[in-house]
Length: 483
Image (cartoon, rainbow, N blue to C red; front, top):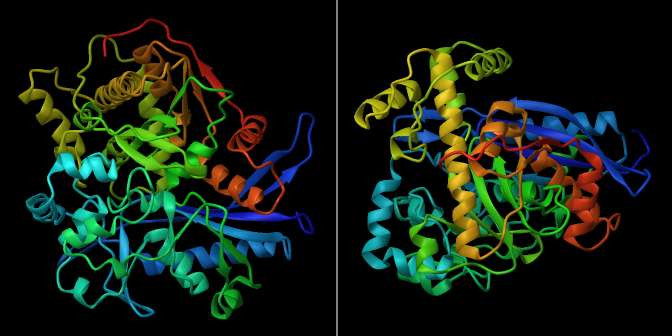
């Protein structure tokens, strides 16, 4: 790849991170994106005496090592770097210093923050202002539970913006991820300063907003020495779902998407938010998308239920070993006959780390459902329950937004789960198109390529490249099943 202009995507998930190197190649019908993973690393939270925290210093070290690997593979060719991650979590800064270690959104402290916020602003008013689904770990609830450090901080940076600050020295907030904080106006997509003040937050904590495609800065000399060369850092859809939706290989309208990884983000891409009371009661959120689009979606628990079950069953196994075990269990789960339990995957009991299989069995006993006995039965129950939740979210989004859905695109790691894709098609009664698997990194790279002037200006131009660049598997519904 040496000498060929390339782009580096840093994609941080809730359980692992990776660095991918991508470049455009000419092909019949237009350019295609070729990408390869150059580094992968774990992202395991740390349980400290005061709560569950992210090991962000190790993440930053791994990011630099991954960018150095990209530079060695394509010396002098990497044009820019884009960073995306999960949403809502943040670091507090005083000047250039990080105050404490960022909390993990699964930490139990957020309940106190919810109560504190709702004492000042009710749930209906919050939704009318920020358009967000009520989730107890939304940033504004976390900030309300923060404690004394908030009084000495002068800046709040979400995780990808924090890493961008360490890379470049520029403290900014990328708009798609900022929309998940609860402090951004749902319509105007600017900081809601009045809401911040009402909640007792100093608006000066909120950094300047930038849009995907903006050049944030250049690697600091200290970072450039590790990487091997100074590179530009470009803002992308830094909320990983925003980048994933860019890479949905849809042609035209009439599609819903399921961005399926640790979470399942299920919904539609719209031109404007849906701020009705019905949407709020149905648990939908209006998050910012690339090019000013709205991601109207519901957060569903996702593959966390399987990954955490595997961690409970095989705590000493490596990620590779767990992946192989999951493949075996999914094959066995496909052979399970007879009815299986369908449970509410979004019950808060499944949020904390730990014995997810035991909680599933307890839930089934308490709700009169068949109790899964074997591991394959439990896996099948999880898959069917996720599919039911995905189908319900698609149907609700269609109804609430008044948009007909003719096809469902399932992107992310879940696209490799054939059993889940088939079950989702059956439960939706619609075709499910699975792929790309690396949707988030693909969207990240495509936004960088457009910022460099290598692709057309419209989001549809990027999706055309995504369609040409990935293999999509079509799953037709075998029969419409009860949701």
